[in-house]
Length: 315
Image 1 (cartoon, rainbow, N blue to C red):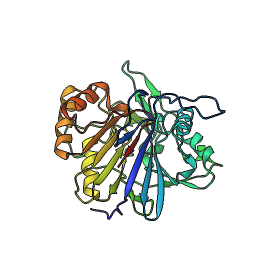
Image 2: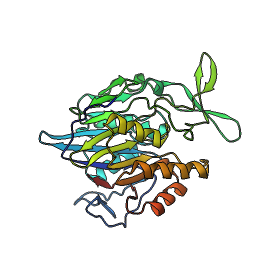
Image 3: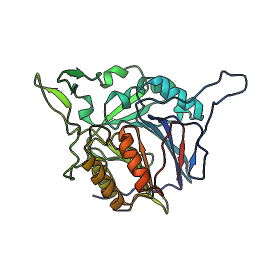
Image 4: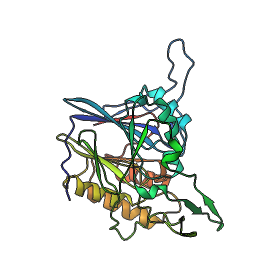
């Protein structure tokens, strides 16, 4: 099922929340990095902050102007707002927020973002994101995830749109995947997760709410952004390519969820299938994990880009 995505002339992806802060890397034609302290005349100095979370602002440019989407909101409103201010990104430009899934490191900054919105902003979310969820920890105990539902944001400018299917946004230039088909044999979802159903805790490892977004840059190809890749980053890429008409991806950005305790053979299989997918740029973020990030950087040095908070990727 291919969906006709309207191509954009150019695009920018600003990393507003991620696990790494590195302020002494020089910018280049592809990636702008603010670096150092951001000091505005007459104002207190501000500095980029990292956290275990993910948020990315997507700015899409065509002959009609600029459209702005926010993919996830990080773990804390403090980091999201701070890094938006550091980069000069105006959160009130956002027209739609896409929630990749409802873990706290992706929805934690939503309330803070809503405080910056002076106009109605749609929030695209899968229905399973509202599940009452728990995680079984290594010692066997279960811990409840923070609640997530539209009622928690009553009185804000947020307008929740619930869908398990793909949704076209920003004048048909951005597509959410909705629920991602699980095809690979080795991408198993998030095994420790449970959900409350009928008064009992049952496995919620598939995380059906996990979704990505994709947009198409004219003459260059599709850009895919994943929040955590709980559906499997290769499943996510393959489905985005299917939705975008089978074109080879220009870039894959976001969490690949290959962090500990992902087995080494799964990391290796993911790398090999990433090579087959053949994106020009690979930007692992957040939950990809150091071992996998190191492997991608070593095996795909011409494609690898180090993600750090505050950087702007230019396509």
